[in-house]
Length: 391
Image (cartoon, rainbow, N blue to C red; front, side, top):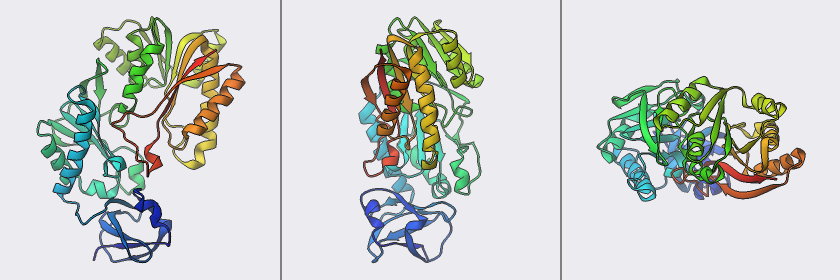
């Protein structure tokens, strides 16, 4: 008998508004018995039907609701959802882009499923038990929606999988997938290492923000911190006099060098070092830059870590502001949902004051539109990018 979940009184409001997550502590009682990871029906306290989603007793998120009607989770259902997601990307990009996020979890009605398109390949992350159990149906749905696909690869090394009771496992799910895939972003050739790079191999959410930095890098001496594969560095290099790409990972910097060579850039140099330490060294050596870019990994992945993250963001932004030549620019980002935009702006205000700088906000930007945010689920709105002038 399938599971039937009854919420505590009043806990249905957020789910009815469009949010997907049902936490274990919001549940009044559970009826029925089925396999963990199976489809469970969610009802209000008084028994009104709300929706269905995959249950996982090992997770704090007991159920992720993604069906609101009477559908079931068969291959046709997945085809429909994936086709809708693909249509949005077609509207957004047409044939202009061969790399984009094809499925963005809750925002595309498929919680815990991430899928990025790189040319003729898809790299997917199944991040919940229920989604992982339905990989075969999902793969067939991708193939039906995109018949030209040559391969589908699973990146299953995200730590959140362990919280779902899943193993960490990367593998080919369909066809053949090379280690490296070559795509074009903002007119630049990029080599994406889908098997060894972070996440699915590349961070597509900054695509449009990377293009936007060009106007702040004309004939400039640019420092790109936490550069990863060099997306910001390469866009800056199209107009800058020189670019320093800084990262703690030599693997990432080798990728930067490869991407620079692909595009014929000779104005990019790489520095392998801890960004916090290297920024202080630049400061001690009296170095100044026309433009500094900060795109660090998430400093906090839970609400409990926000205070420590705030201090980390403040530390790196104060030092960066001191390295910007008067009238130059700081592009500073946060990819942590818990570091909200108002909190991030507050941190920047304090950083400017402590750095002794007058700072103007020229632009504020968010994640690319192939990473849509649900108004009902604030967790899906996570990326902030502030484009600042430092005086």
